[in-house]
Amino acid sequence: MARILWKGEDQPRWLQAGGQRLEAGLLRLLWWLLAPLSPPRASALGRRAFTWLGPRSAKHRHVLANLAMVCPEADRSRLQTLARGVWGNIGSVVAEFPHLPRIIAELEVVCEHPDPAFRSARRPCIFVAAHLGNLYMSAAAIRRLGYEVDLVYSPLANPHLDRLVQDRLQVLDCGFITKQEALRAMRRSLKQGRSVGLHVDVRVDGGETFPLLGAPATTTTAPAWLSVTTGAPIVPVRTLRLGDARFRTTLYPPLPRPPAQAGREEAIAFLTRRMNAVIGGFIREHPEQWMCTKRRWPKPLMRERGAYRF
Image (cartoon, rainbow, N blue to C red):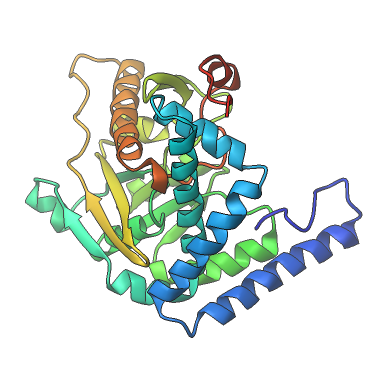
């Protein structure tokens, strides 16, 4: 809902503040109306609303273009179907906020990590995920295994909306690190014995490029750098929507360690490539659940490959 009812710094301050407060008020009202419903019913209503609204928004072209990169073999009809799934999933996530405690309690957690010590949370880890399903279930699964974790997040442009969302996320019982100074804060958390978690499927403007689903994409190297400098393993996490307000979160084996003879930069590149291969695989398997409303790959490349042809 950010920046729907206000535009930015070029607006008069009173108009900007009024629009921000109105946005937050509308979301608060929406959640109040959804709270008496069952979690599946609220989730379904959000899905239906956004399935209709999303394709009519300016962001829809980016969703289609990203999906065209993920599924180059798909025709227009298939991409539109996948895009409606993306918007429906986003709508469900918005509508599920009032029911997070119950949804978390019913979350299915699968641990495929082979090390018994991992289940006892003996050492901090770097958890990486994509924006799939309900993105907050990953943190819930990590906490259920006993890990103290700090999550990296981008504050919403609307501070009133951001506070509203953060209040609801207290149910996760974890810390939060803003993207500003995130690298230093994550390193400090790991040194204190706390794990860190971040979503790594977003564009990093000015960052290094690494292959993602067969195309170069600017990618964060923060998880790899942290792993190389602290020794903490990188553990992929995937959340899948099984239905309205129903999820399965799987924690996978850690990424393989870089070759012993590799230098720091080579080791960071090795881990980042492996990370993108795993995360790309998650997205490829369930593109209709990928919350991809911002352009992921470089614009010239996407145009060259015809991603914006629809």
